Image 1 (tube, rainbow, N blue to C red):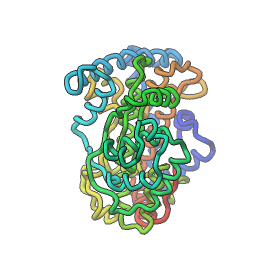
Image 2: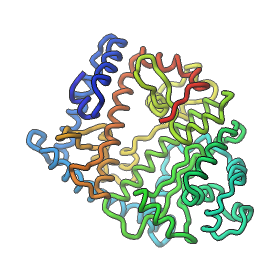
Image 3: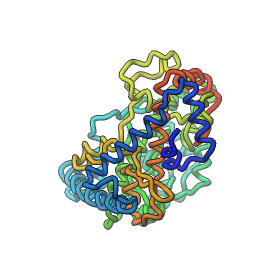
Image 4: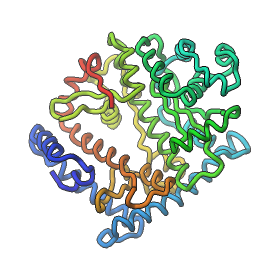
Length: 414
């Protein structure tokens, strides 16, 4: 085990060291952690060279500020590209959010998901009428609202205006759902039209520091309008987080497909909505997030022959698209960020992240070096490390051996 991984992940010791020792022993001591650590450090040095920096004498603080300037320049180019897309395909206003929605909807990647039917969503909303949302939207009755508005947009309005008690009641209703309330359909990627209550949307964006609503169980991503004046990096942060959420929606979809035959299907829907399913493993000291299992199999080019996945999943269902790869296809100048989600350079107390989500969040929030965000890099590094271990048969078989029974009884929240 290398000190670099422990320091970069800010992992609690000695638990992290003991976990890796156990994984190494189970796989015949292949030194996966050492090789991975070496690969990460070498790849980070290569990225510094791409920036025109000397890895030997560039301080963490210098790197941080140079990355901030890089994000600003890339964000300006991305914003221009999205405005052009909006003007050409959506409206003459060249609204950047409309450009995001158009780009994501037209992008040739997996858009299928297993999600709640529109009719079932209407039935849920009718059980707990969102009175505040109806008032905001200018409707006197729920029936009239659902007649003229998409149930998904009514849901978005209710989510923003009703508050935690209403949200909790909705989640509790999810426990009543059955597989017949779900369907295989296209992902919904839409921009909310809040012309009747723009102030609420603006307040929420200002308060939450992002303009996205993600509903994994509904297979939906809703964009709120951005304010007219947005700080540098905000567009990149918004689009990057949207791509992150789309991957989470895909992973949740495959999990729910596998749970269709389980007697507690509604409970699994509840767990997906409020957290993330996790699977235990005898070789790991903590549960494995389902999205990691999903991501692992998305990298394989052979068919899924494991009986645990049949007959509900096919290889086409298990899609995972790296954020940086998609960003680069939308705006080619963002190529620098490819393959950097799990890269970082050790600083004084915490690493400097080369993850574009961290970099964009740091930029748009004008965070100083001492308060920089690194959580997306650390999450990506930990996931990549586990993916390296999953390639070893003992670890993969350990997860698969417990996968089928746990889908029925052992789902834990993130």
